[in-house]
Image 1 (spheres, each protein chain N blue to C red):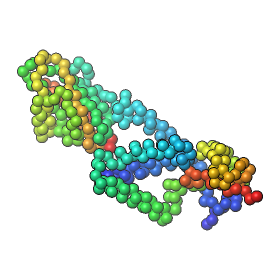
Image 2 (image 1 turned 180 degrees about the vertical axis):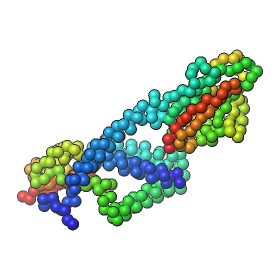
Image 3 (image 1 turned 90 degrees about the vertical axis):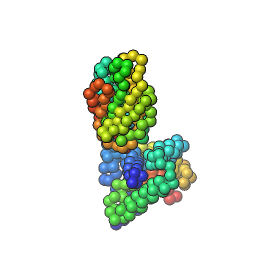
Image 4 (image 1 turned 90 degrees about the horizontal axis):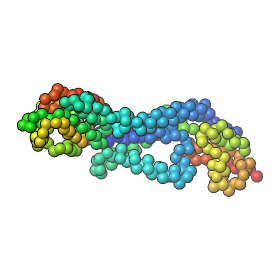
Length: 148
Length: 167
C-alpha cells in the first residue's frame, strides 16, 4: 500500500511542478536541461522506492505509474476539459512572419529559439521565411515555412 | 469543431493560456516559498526546526528537532543532572514514541533497557561523580504524523514536547 501511495504522490507532485514550470521547462534546449532531467530522476527514485529494493516493490511502483498514465488518458477522453489542464495548449508565437512578443516573453522563449528550430527542421535562414511558429504542448517549436 | 488560427488548424485557446500564465505565476511564488521554507528548516534540519524543551541548567532539558522525516535520522539530546553515585541514572521515554521509531544508536550505551507497557527505560552505568550528563539518542522515525514525546529521568517529572514527522 505504501508503494502505491508513494507513486501516486510523486506522480501528482511532478505533474504539478512541471505544469508550474511551463511548456519550455523540459524541452531539452541545452545539454544542461538533459542533465537536469537525469538529476530529477535520481532524486525521484529514492522517494519512489524508499528503502525497499525488492523486485516486487519495483513492479508495484511501475504498475501504479502505468495505471495512472493510462487512467488519466482515459479520463481525458471522457472529460476533454482535463486535457488542457494536464497538458496545456499549443500557442502561436510567429503569426504570418510576425513575432508575438508578449507570448514569447511569458513562455520564456526568444527569437533565437525560433530561428534555431527553423534552421534545424527546414534549413531556413531568416525570420521572414517563417510563416507560422507554434510552441507545442511538448515544449518544442514547430515551424511552417512561407511558400516561395 | 475545428479551430483555426490563420491558415493553421490548431487547438489554440488563448483564454485558457492566459489563465495558465496567471496560475503559473502564483505557482512560482508557491515554489519559492516552499524552497525558502525548506532552507529555513520547516521540513527539518534548519534554524526553524531546532528546538529545546526545558532550560539549560535545569534538572532536565532536551534538544530535539521540531520537524523530522520518516527514514531520516534525527537526534534527541537529553541533558540531566545525575544524582548521587549509587542511584541509577535512567532516561524514560514514552512507549508510543518508541513504537514510532527505529533506534539507531544511544551514546553512552545503556547498561540495561526495559520495555514497559507505557514507557521504555534506559539505565546507564553510574558515573564517577554527580553532575550534568548528556545522553544522545539517534533515532529514525518510521511513522508519519505529529508525535508527542515524553521524557523523564530518575528524579524529574515528565518533560513533554511535540515533533512533526513528514512522510
